[in-house]
Image (cartoon, rainbow, N blue to C red; front, side):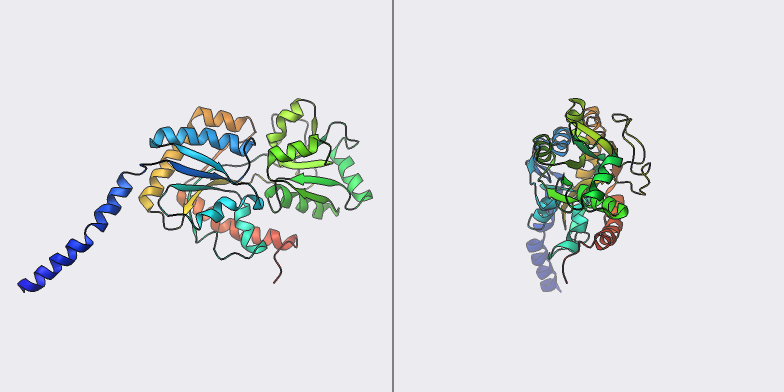
Length: 323
């Protein structure tokens, strides 16, 4: 009996350092800088607003939150990088809607619902279609008329293949029976250079284009929200134009699968407070964006639901990967 007791004590002595180490790691989190992978290039509306949020969160967490831009692949590179990152809370990724389309368009060996831990939803975009002010296209009616008369010749840019601006514009084109020429870019900053440089006839993007509109370089043909934007009161919504489409493309933050729940909770609470900071709300307002909070549980449910609806959209547009 005594021998069995000694064996049990010895086994406990071997195992016990692991449990306190885990507990200590969670209670002391974070004790080094956190990486925040952003899906679009520096200088665009996503980058600018996320850096404000990161600064706020870093002050709350007591460690810097360092933004790393990972543009390309339709905004999915940060989520892909989570698959090879340690589940310790020190790597976070912005997760645009393109993440939920990826398995339907590209062969991957991970699941966007099961292999990611969803921390918090932050906001969503306000979108629209713009043309240069010197374009002969003065209205959405002109846009559609030109596209119908010149199939496949009206060039428009987006922030990447299979991003929300791309897919929504293709859905618009499908409903109107027109064919457009899509040219993808890596983000809003690059897209803005292309359209102001005369390389495109139109652009579909978030309202990061607002300064160029206000400077008289671009004209807004429509916006994609449920109601008109205060900044562009003359631009009709897609619904007003007879298209039953509303797109605001929510996005938030995620961590690798297996991140400890108490670490997720700490990150959630810090970023929720950071979202409520007036500096972040003001930064969002510059691009007609609003805080769009979802808890970890609600964001996980959103991911599950969106994964299903995005499959239907990709299949409807015929953009799925070959079997």
